[in-house]
Length: 140
Image (cartoon, rainbow, N blue to C red; front, side, top):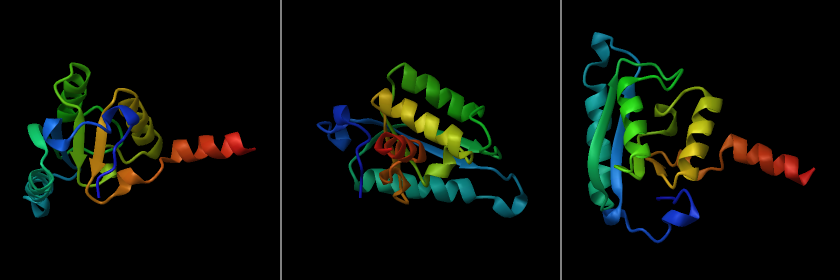
């Protein structure tokens, strides 16, 4: 079920990783109360079942995914850059960003830093749009 983002991370076992959970819900509508809690519970359960050591949880409740300028996301980026975390677990990859180009750039940059990105829906296992486009261009 889990895919490793890059070659450097293949030899690291889940329990040796410094994992972070990231949750985002765009709407702060009263009907959506508790939605972020449901995401958090599912991600905690996944991490526990797969032996990940969750050291940080980042929650952006009421923030859209049109850009990466969200308080918890910005803090997560700072923690990635300082080496506090090396794995990010999300419910689905669009929790990172809705905009495909922003999301794919972040994933590509994260992979280059040795960050393992895991999405419960398996979307992290698919080649990114950018990777697919590059492969297509190289084949021409």
